Image 1 (cartoon, rainbow, N blue to C red):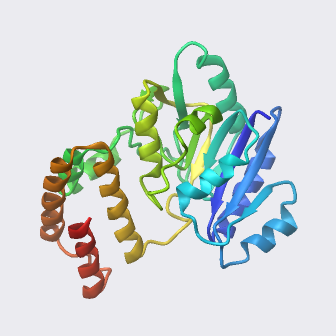
Image 2: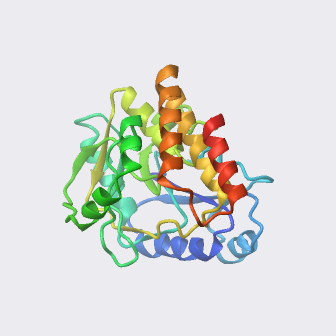
Image 3: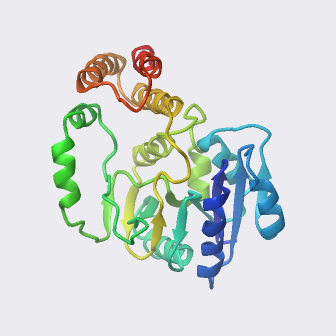
Length: 288
């Protein structure tokens, strides 16, 4: 088996069906399997998958394990030499699995690459603005006042060329299964958010490179697979501080936390949420 595609599903069947259809319609000339880990979905996900996609390996969890842990479950049963962790809100526009596999087989013999990813497209087939660097506390603080910079950045033309990067989007990450096992998989302390960031950090700490390649064409319907709510805002902040506590010295994280909290409050309370929701949100940052 050359490639195992692992997809975590949680109430996203309306996106997962076209994702799976795109995999089977676009992939050829390579031995692959598709593993779907269902995180105890409450919609009709399991019924639809069992009736319409009999060739996939469906793993049903009795509870929501979170994104990283569910991917670990899928990886444990994967038979492929390589793993492709793929979000359910993605669509393959070409033979991406073969592109990933051929690139890694060709170039990883010459240089030590730990993971590769694509330049993702949005639903209009426009390249998504990339975030190629691992997060740093200083950049996150600066980003609190970066609405003008971000607006200008979105107007910039994205140059598409193969390059080494620090970070690739977790919507599509391709890496050797043996390396994933050596690293111990995704850290289960990250229920959602920052799990792929932590994995990429650890890959590079081993002296391995991360690269974006141009040949796979994948659309990412970013954010379509779940809706933001206050609980997920809180979970994002929790994962963010778990990441920095894990990889930075304690006193730096403490200083960052209070500066970040003050900037968030000064920047204004998000009007999308109630006062009680915002109090819980800011309290979560304070307690992190």
